[in-house]
Image (cartoon, rainbow, N blue to C red; front, side):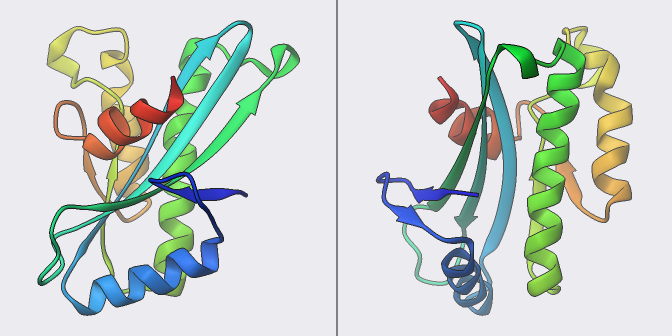
Length: 155
């Protein structure tokens, strides 16, 4: 799994974990989110790890991972949304396995049930998937790790 910094520099997951450990010692928060985008018979999934709120931290730090799937692997819309959530939960689980006391929140690129959007019928189930996996969870419009950071790099 190839990760990169906000500046596009390659970084491995072990290095990210070390940064998260230092960030956690300074009472920082960790947010994980995934977004996807379909273009020219390819689907790009981007997962972000966002670090905010550490003592004396100005602004945020983030890391992204991109996966591109070709025509034979293209998921249906609902399977694609499920895969976004699954990718976020899997990364959150990896982080918390190594740093169990980290304050981590999973962000979903999904509208709440009452919004009546295309993803709204999935909101209750996918929120349950995230919280059932042991994570705090935010939906749109509060899910910036997915809807802003990952979205920016998925296009």
